[in-house]
Length: 141
Image (tube, rainbow, N blue to C red; front, side, top):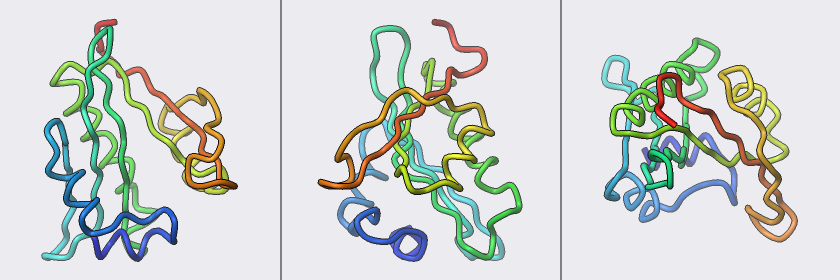
């Protein structure tokens, strides 16, 4: 997963090997991996957190190898982690996306995520993030 993250993201959006392991092995982590013929095609890590009403699933990262993009894999990974989050009591999902990542912003909006706010300096002094959320279908609020 670390090697794929190095290819998918530029600094400062990459995770170190230690950070990747910490996120993937954390209590409450949900990790979904897509492989084709033994090759890692993509993965998604979600952290399930407590919230006042139901739980909250936070998308730590969504990575898809270049050769597997534009095939619906990212959407299938997100559907799967959303389903797993819902199964353990999450009512909604949240995520941060870099303001300059227009493709990711369009993807999240197409898959039902709604803009919440802008986090100034989330990725460093001059790089902001947009926060998105999605209420999970079937969630009890």
